[in-house]
Length: 146
Image (cartoon, rainbow, N blue to C red):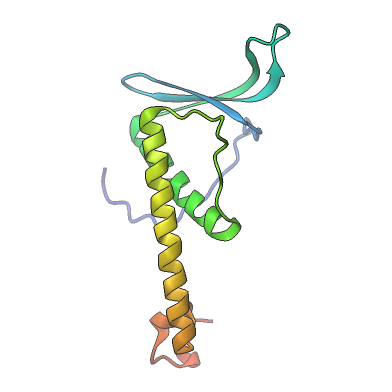
């Protein structure tokens, strides 16, 4: 892919744009694609043997785009937990082996990021310098962009 020197993205809304709530996702893969079918759990079946899910939308993407999505979701979860606290997985949730290992790795990385953030904040507090000011040492207010 040629270097296009793109600096930003402008999002346009398709006339077919959907916004849905989902508390259930089913993932399927083949050689070319990864598909995620999103739905909402509506409760148990009449006989109580199955969980009923009202599926509303399927998103299909390339494996490469899926990896980019995973990285973006992990980054957003780190930011979310930094702001709102840890998301605790209910004991009833059974994760697949690889996904569970990835999640545990993410949780470790998230904890480490919080520790680094707290240490940087403590450093800034002890020097009387805001984290945002560290890159502006030696500059006057007139040098800063308005």
